[in-house]
Amino acid sequence: MFNLLQKIGKALMTPIAVLPIAALLLRLGFGDIFDGQIAVIMKSAGEAVFANLDLLFGIGIAYGLAKNNDGAAALSGAIGVLIAKAVYISIDKDVNMGVFVGIIIGVIAGTLYNRYHTIKVPEFLGFFGGKRFVPIITALAAIFVGVLAGYFWHYAQNGIDSFSNTIIGLGETGTFIYGTLNRLLIPLGLHHILNSLFWFQLGEYTYLKDGVEVIANGDLHRFFAGDKSAGIYMSGFYIVMMFGLPAMAYAIYLNTPEAYRKKAGAILAGAAFTSFLTGITEPLEFLFLFVAPLLFVIHALLTGFALAAAQALDVHAGFGFSAGFIDYVINYKLATNPLRILPLGALFALIYFIVSYYTIKFFKLTIFESELSEENNRNNCASNESTAFIAALGGKENIVTVDACITRLRITLKESGSLKDEEFAALGAKGVIRPDRHSIQIVLGTKAESVAESIRNAMSKKKF
Figure 1: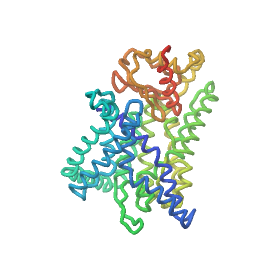
Figure 2 (figure 1 turned 90 degrees about the vertical axis):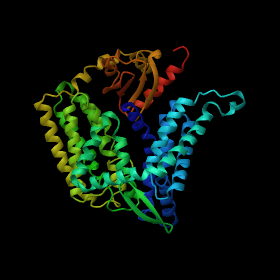
Figure 3 (figure 1 turned 180 degrees about the horizontal axis):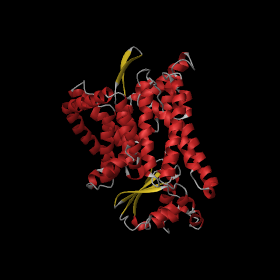
Figure 4 (figure 1 turned 135 degrees about the vertical axis):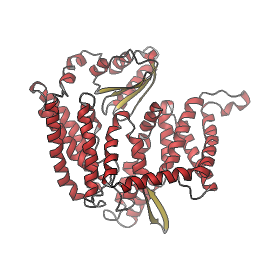
């Protein structure tokens, strides 16, 4: 189950990747940048994405879970979502599964593809064998899901509403819990599942589109639909990503021995600037996550406090991609009290720096010494990076599947017990996660996808 949840978390990145452009289009359609027909076109284009998130999730998750990311799985996911929705609405028009129907059908379609994409059928039905069989069986499964949802989803819906009301009722405490969990789940790759609930399901906002009432669910969609109460579960991330983490990076730099400072400074500066500008934090977080987990726990707690503080000061600032400076500028006019982020960010930068600096010093945490001392080993590694990784993974015959998310390789193996973490560290890994004896995740940073592709290409060569 844990492995499945990790795969779902990774697969969620595919549909989520389209949200930045949708959010940008909605932002451009608010009338203060463009006006007239251009604004209408921009807003309609962005709304088209948010109005069909369930369909996008079904397609994206099925695609992400399928072996070799095959398009037949994506098609099956789309068909499944359309059928399931039509069925449960015909039974109970008040049922609204939101993105959950996309997640459920996406998982089903991806799983069915992996199980049946090579199925053999009788010769007279040969046309419907193999990959063509997957949309058929997914459609049947979707009918079953639709019937169950039509009769029973209102119980789950009531549960989600109760959970939402409980979290909202907790005020800043609930926001603190969410913010802390959001960071703590990053090493497991499950934070996207948590975000799916808060950003795409929690809360409801009704607005008019062409004279018709439209319902927006989730902190992210409600924010870009114009709900001034939205953004609670997003605002505080600006404080962390633009101010807190860069300050922590500086504290790490000052605690790095002189012999390593020059190279450590270059790495930290790049990762900190990436966090500030774009809100992509994993390259920086994974620098200390495995070598100084105490520092990561402190970071998670401070993230929770940052979100709670933003809510207490009535700051509502959403983002389409992540809480970096780019999103801050783009969405400034849509936000409520966005200027308060700056002094609050400065305060948290100071807190992050002081707490990090003295934690590293008191506990004598080492961040860069071991990594940079491996540099000679890296220089002596095989010039072909993919060949070196395949060898470190136990050879081609030990590798079942090779995949990647933004910052980590996700490998399924016949056996992982004999593999050595030091070999991956010598190839530039920031950390290694072993969910079970058949799976391994290697944290590489933003080059993970290109490394995965080079490994797949190398393995596909007959003479490898």
